[in-house]
Length: 402
Image (cartoon, rainbow, N blue to C red):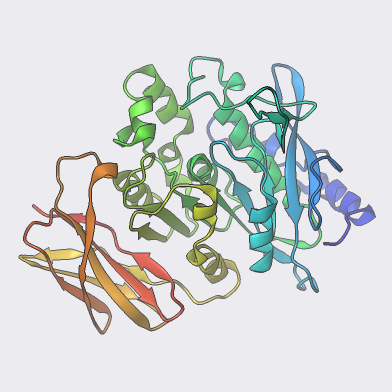
């Protein structure tokens, strides 16, 4: 990765001089967050091939805050207008992940991954515990599921986490090897929830990929929804933080990745979120997808989707809404790669919480730009899945059977 010395200083100065006033969105001061932050390289938690960074965020309880991050760009000659790039947002129990940055580098993207709870990606041993080491100037840590909702907003973790993500974006936009007009955002679990919020707050992003996490959290019968509702906590989340408060601002392409049985974020709220954004959206419901950072950054569809938006790559299969006609289901689709496999997934369970419902597979046939399938007699909800010749899979929305 190129070292960032005098050239970056000039870019930073220039960025401050031409910063465009941002429209207010939610409780965040975007004029401030869109400025390039103060930052420095650090040898703490150093990893070969990565630049370890400490950058300044908004104060917490009148004290300065520094955020640790890993950053790297791909090896090789920098494209004429710079590398496309992505901001990576970790989930609960996560931190800055050099492995995640490297994975994006291998796909031709510069990437930054930061710790949003004031930690370094290091641990110390205290008895039988291995708590994370804090930076010298940490911000707040997450308290359960919006457990700090009653505090002044300036002291709530989610407020600071959104700010730290937007500032990381501002920082990366200033790097001379990055194409500032080709930066996306992705997040896993809590990071997916933050992605759902950030993409409607920071209008500079060009694509967004929430994994597991989404909006409409209080509507879920998964862990997140049950932890939030009912009462004042729900009101605070809906009014200030939930992505649904900002989806009307989203015009960029989005890819929503989730499993059929995720315990935290259920299929209905993922679908509700996908429908609520203004830009084109694609769904990828994976049968019984496990929940975790590795599982969340592993699908190749994520990188192909980013390529299709900012690098002229071949698009993923995109579905219209499926239709039911008696015991037959169908859906039309658009694809530039040949489909090699198609399935109908269905559940016969209409009473269990969504994470507990068992999904099964049935054969679907490909006829031109339409998939067809016979619906099993006991099915109460169905959706289609298709895999193309690149072995990339996307799905339709699910539809309930009356």
